[in-house]
Every structure is written in structure tokens, then in C-alpha cells.
Length: 147
Image 1 (cartoon, rainbow, N blue to C red):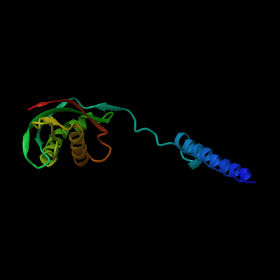
Image 2: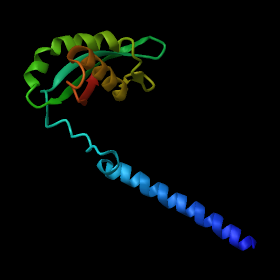
Image 3: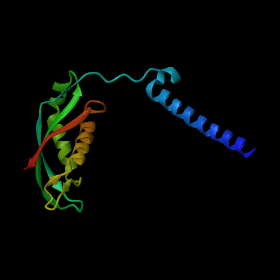
């Protein structure tokens, strides 16, 4: 009697696991079958703006200035918008400078190692302000050297 109850519970738990995994797989790999809508298309081809050098202050978490760092960045933008983005680069540099002195990016014992993720986030926030939404897809930091 108890054996039948245990087998019934095991079959129920196994069925829930298999069914849940199957549902996740369908939603993840074929959402058009469930929702009736196709996956969102990719945003199209992109290109990179030629490298730009940015001189930014490195600041400790307590607000002390550690030094300056020169970053070389490239912006990934939708194809065909490179000239428009390049024309507003001075505005982007200004927006980056207005944010970097408030963002702690200095690390290491002497504070001369920059936090690249923090700097990338600063540039993306500045790009959102200057260019608007979806104008800059990503930022590639190609070089960082003491300024």
C-alpha cells in the first residue's frame, strides 16, 4: 500500500520536472509557438566610431583624487550614424568629464589602476544623455594608460 503511494508521488514529481523543463525550453528557444509573436529582430548591422582619447580623473571611493588616466574608447553605433555621432563627440567628452570626478574608479595600492567597468558605465550614461536611447550600443575601451 505504501509502495503505491510513494510511486505515485515520485511519478507526479518527475512529471512536474519534465513538464517544467519542456515549457522553459519552448519559451526560451521557440517563443513564437507560445506567444504568437516572433522573437524581436536584431537591431541591424553596426559599426565603430574611430578611436577617441579621453583624459579622466581617477577618484578613490572617499573622493580623493588619485591621478589622471587616458582612455582610448570606441563607440559601437548603428551602421550609417558614425558621422552624426562623431559630430557630437565634444559633447560626449564633456558629459564624461562631468561624471568621472564623481565616480570612484581608482583601485590598486597606489590608486592608478582604473576600474574599466565603472568607466564603461560612465560613458554609456553620458552617451544616453548626449545621443539618446539606442544611438550607442556599446563602448569598447581599447587602451588605458596613465595620463
